[in-house]
Image 1: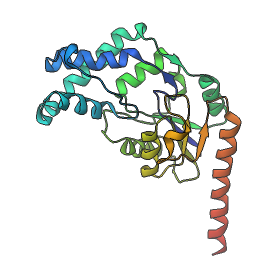
Image 2 (image 1 turned 60 degrees about the horizontal axis):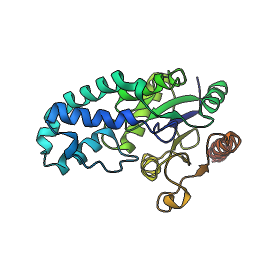
Image 3 (image 1 turned 120 degrees about the vertical axis):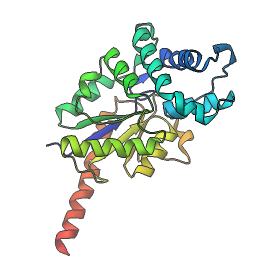
Length: 246
């Protein structure tokens, strides 16, 4: 049984610029809510969950929360269907050193999971398309269809790690890696150590209010990650010694 866990965001962390994902929102809004694309004024939603984005964009257009809630099942179904049918048109790409880093984590016995604002169906389609799916077969994840709040998604993923893998999380044996200040803020709320990888649109100065425990320029800095994780585990050893002495 593994005693080490890494949870990953997807967009901006593992892969970048998924054009089809935005198109999936626009398609669903038109089909389900009758809103033409020309009426939408899409804004930046980095770090937000898909359900949160649906709320924001539709409320701007005067759609009531009651109508959104009633139609969200069909909306998400249309989004996933569109993503599946059009993923081959996507202009996104896997970020530098990601496959090598994930392979090394698996080699060293880490459990890996996804915590993403994406609907689970969309997240899985992306992972298979970008040939990263085999790294995430442990049944661990928190997805945008499970809650609007990313901090809650992290807690959901940790609970799945416990129920499906017997993993008992503490603040020395697991980390969350994301690329936005909202990722880091959510991880803080959830009580898990945080790493910001600077492969998205955000750079170090953008994390003034929500500072991670470690910055990585990209996953080519694997040595820095493993050094950081070793230090986390040494904290656990110190804790255990303290308990033994008392």
